Image (cartoon, rainbow, N blue to C red; front, side, top):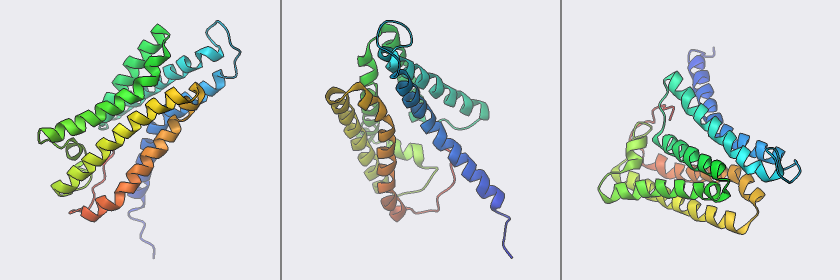
Length: 212
C-alpha cells in the first residue's frame, strides 16, 4: 500500500519552490517581453516608440521586482538580503535612467550590482566574516573551509558577470544585451549546479528546507 502521508507536504514544498522560481524569472521575462513588443513600434518621437523600448522594459522590471518584495512581505516570507540590495539598485539606477533618458545607467546597473555582491563577499572574508555562510547556514551545514571556498567561488563569479556585462553592452547591440538577461539567469543556475557536488560532498548535516 502506498504511503501518501507525506504527499501534502511534498506538494506544498513543490508549490513554494515553483513560486520562488517564478518570482525570480517574472521580472526578467516581463522586461524581455515588453522590450521586444516595443521594438516593433516605429522609430521617432513619442512615448511608445522603438527608441523608448528599453525605458518601458526597465519600468516594468522595477514595478514587478518591487511587487515581488511586497508580496513576500505580505505573506511574511523571508526576503534574501541580495534581493533587497538588487531591488534598491534596480530601482535607483532604473529610475535615474528613465528620468534622465540615459541608457548608460541601465547598461551599467548589472555591473554595479555584481561588483557590490563581490565586494560584500570578499570584504567580509577580509575581516573574518563569511557572508555566504551567514546567508545560507540555515539551508545546510558545512565546515568553515567549505564555506570559504564557496564564498570565494561566488565572489569571483560575480566579478566575472560584471566583466561579462561590460563586454556585452559595449560590444553588441542594445537588443542583444537586453535579451541576454535571461541568458544570465541560465548561467547563474548552471554555476549553482556546478557547485552542488562540492556542497553535497562536504555537508555535515541533512539539508533543511528553506524558502530563501
